[in-house]
Image (cartoon, rainbow, N blue to C red; front, side):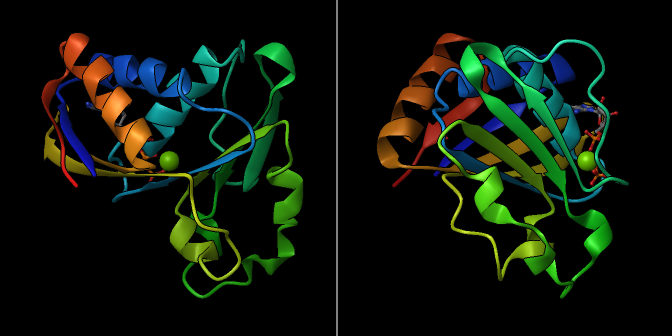
Length: 163
Ligand SMILES: Nc1ncnc2c1ncn2[C@@H]1O[C@H](COP(=O)(O)OP(=O)(O)OP(=O)(O)O)[C@@H](O)[C@H]1O
Ligand SMILES: [Mg+2]
């Protein structure tokens, strides 16, 4: 597990750029954490880094939005909040979101837990102060290690990688 403190929205943006550089299709990234912890903010930063120009709308009401990114990437932003606990996420054709050209970011994956395959990267955000968030990230150990090194080099606070 990798932990850090994201002390401002700018720090979250810096983290997004480092994480985006380590994502290769196909990948599923889940984002967990209470309302307002910055899941959508982080996904927006990721999508912009990956080549999405213009407005990135929150998919709270549409459940999913797809975009074209750099290098033929298909980028999917899914928000299952409105499905609610125990909802039937089987209505989602997950295989369409997890093909070889796709990176898929899912907020509130709890609502689709039964159908979602295991995440390649799982992010948990928690409120610390109004402008600061605690980050927990779970990924393959090699990714956690290189990402932690890059985060330390970028000056992100309290970075630690633990087995
Ligand atoms: N360090 C930080 N990182 C990210 N966002 C931050 C930070 N500090 C403050 N914020 C603010 O917190 C808010 C987070 O809202 P956001 O919509 O991203 O949360 P969310 O986790 O997606 O919520 P929801 O569960 O409702 O979808 C934004 O207004 C953002 O500017
Ligand atoms: Mg959100």
